[in-house]
Length: 109
Image (cartoon, rainbow, N blue to C red; front, side, top):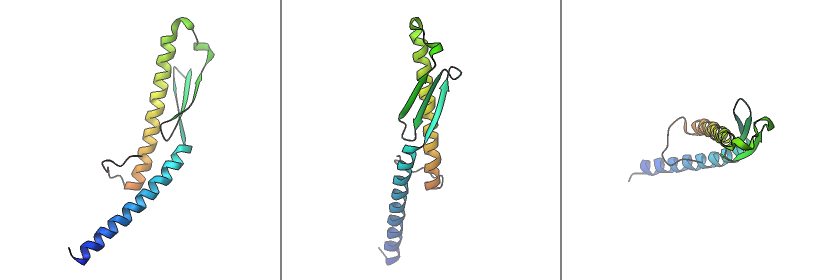
C-alpha cells in the first residue's frame, strides 16, 4: 500500500464520518417534519412524521356507522398507508441530498 492509497482511505473515512453526522442531523429534523394524508374524500386524516410514526388520526363523525366498521377500517388503513408512503418519499428526498442521488445499499435511517 502506497502513501497515496493511505491518503485515499483517510479521505473516504472522513467523508463517511461527515455523511454519518449529516444523517444524524436529518434524522432529528425529520422527526419534527410531518406529512398529511387523507382517504374517503377527507373523512379520515392522518399525520405521519419523517420517522414513519403515526402522529395523529382524525375521523369525521359522519362516517361512524357501527354497522359498517369494515369501511372505517379500510379508510384508516388507506390513509395511514398513504401517510407512510409520503413520509418515505420525504426521507428519500433528504437522503438524495446527502448522497448526491447515489443509492448506497444498507444506508437507511
